[in-house]
Amino acid sequence: MIPKLHSADGILPALMTLVSRAGSIAITSHQNPDGDGHVAALALQRFLLCKGIQADIVTDGDDLKRFDFLGETSGVVPYSEAMSYDLLIVLDCNSMDRLGLRQKLVSVAKATVVIDHHVLEHNPIPADYHYIETAYVSVGAILFRALETELALVPDNDRLFMANCFWTTILNDTNNFTNANTDSFVFAMARDLMAYGIKPHILYKEFFQNHSAAEMRFVGETLSTIRLHLNDRILFMHSTKEMQLRNGIEPEAIMSVTRWVQGTAGLDAIVYFCEKEPGIWKLSLRSLKLNVQAIAAKYGGGGHIKASGCTLEGNLSYIEEIILADLTDALANHA
Image (cartoon, rainbow, N blue to C red; front, side, top):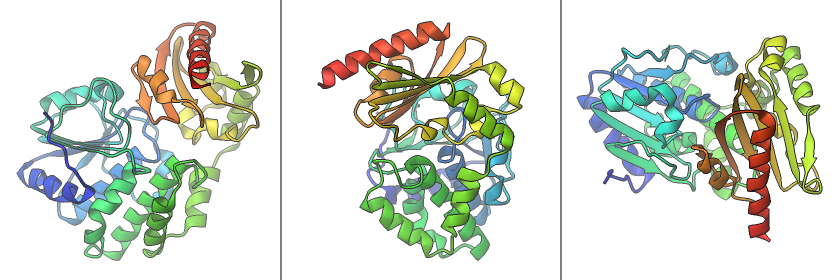
């Protein structure tokens, strides 16, 4: 059985014990890095650097320019099969399936730590230690509480960098404090982060509003594909590879396309179908009423009960058909 850390307080001692034994360290997150997993990795990397410890953040070679507003974010390297690290730290992900090719990093690491806030998914990552707590709004929030007592000991500029990162992870996973997961615990954490001198209005603007004209055109084209089903209770929309190429962008450059339709009156669920490659579709499912994590898990995906994702191969109309059937069943069972 994988040893479980029973509180965030236990993360730092366990982590530093493993770090002290490791000659090389990698930090990674799920495929398509976002404002929680990747930004939390930036914060952890900076914390370790303050301790004189070097660590690489390993990605799939994604375009991460949207996080440049945080400041110096070097030390990010694209994955290659030749890579091997003594210690692997996985953030915001607990399933091997969501690591893609980077699954090999787990198999060759001498020790692995998993820190996450998602529901335990299919094919869990084998780890020497894991801390998975769904009560936390983001994995960055977990790390903030785990490292909080140490922040006073790091230089001012590093402390501010990490605080900006932790705030950004909360922005990402609460959609700027508007999602149902925003509670008194989140606002207490926001209060504590404010004490470090962050500027919320600037972070909000840089994270949510700093889109190019091409990106906004892409969003508009995606919104133009909206279709409603089940008496207007289900909203589908999609973007194709051709739309991405024509606008010269990656969909991940757009912070959560689904947020542009959240709040639409009368909806029970939203699904965004994004064509990654011809015939390969990444699905983002959102619902305040249904357990969309259960649907995503059927197809090797996962996430949260109200916000999850998965990847399917095939014709769009067929994929829409099976997802609509899943949602129809879920609504019938919910009634």
